Amino acid sequence: MDNLVGYLGPVAVLVVTIVLFMGLWNMLRGGSPNRSQQLMRWRVGLQFVAIIILMAGLYLTSS
Image 1 (cartoon, one colour):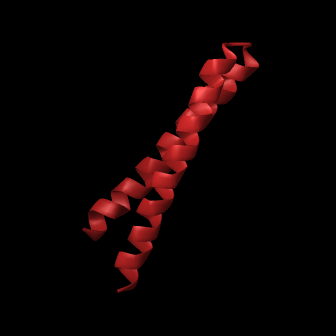
Image 2: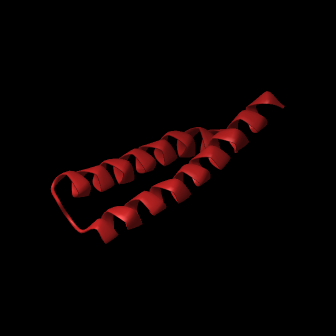
């Protein structure tokens, strides 16, 4: 289980980073504001998931 969380943590952070840059890129090129808003909402949700995964990893490795 520790290995699974060890792999999921960096993947979750990478996914959050990709969505962040997609939203920023859309805003910088003058894309649809609704699309940028949707991507930023996805980013917030994915950050929540990433934090849960990282906290679970810390909990599992400390015990």
